[in-house]
Length: 69
Length: 306
Ligand code: SF4
Ligand SMILES: [Zn+2]
Ligand SMILES: [Zn+2]
Image (cartoon, rainbow over the protein chains, first blue to last red):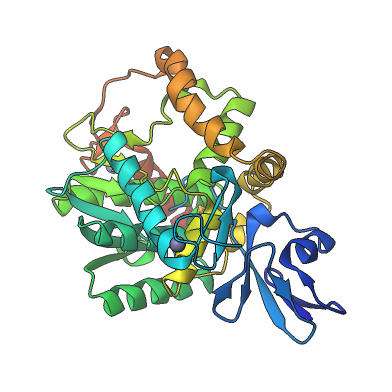
């Protein structure tokens, strides 16, 4: 499967299919800080991503000063 | 995974509530959480004219969308900061969203109005970019709300923002800031406008999910000055704790509001507010911090150019 990670944007190929939970763990990404998206759909941790599919890991955390608006 | 409310297929799991939601139930959940915050903290009424600070990011657009859906009278306010490619792209997203929704929007360009962008302020004053930027935002938001007859200013701070700010303030024992960490601040002077943070019950991951599920086209890029910010480190640490112990961010912040904040009340600097001699905005000094920064920037820039 292809995993697109943003900020910095990079692509990771992972052989085989696996659950969202496991793919985040392998990539050492804290699930509290991202959403995993396939096309338009948000995926829950138990969802299986198949080998031929592409998913995107969208970062939720934004930074800046504490007065950020 | 199934929605715990209607048993449709879930699109998001929220471990801190030990639940999962389908799209429709999640959108309703978010809007109810905001309504609950507004009511419990007495933030807004339907009669208020609300100025919503919009950067173009997911949090501020979520705030605007939800407040509108809940029936509040909103106008967006965007500040053009003049930061590289980041600012024009942010402005574009805000304007496109406002136009699509038919929402009123006020845009102020710092450079057009005051001759300096945020990077130029950092160059011509001792302030770092985020400090010059934060001061300018606070000043312009209050001034615009006052001038436009708005009764409340709403900002899109989420649970991660306020919990990481609390973490930083505790870490450094900034007791006065700790005392001032209220989710809604009443105007204490005729030249100050009430402010509120209606998204404090939502994590950043939840505001992101709301934005994506509503199909809101938000500005995803980060400001280049955010890189390496300590607030990001604190957020990261808090999210590691959250992963190990769901709900910890919420209990940290809301527990502080309930049990901790009042302990620092005596540390609030009670200095009398008066009107700035230059611009008339509320300040504790003769000339307000914003006017002093601008004056310094002008003087340094003209020295450089002579
Ligand atoms: S990161 Fe700093 S400079 Fe950039 S928008 Fe936020 S406060 Fe302003
Ligand atoms: Zn449901
Ligand atoms: Zn002033």
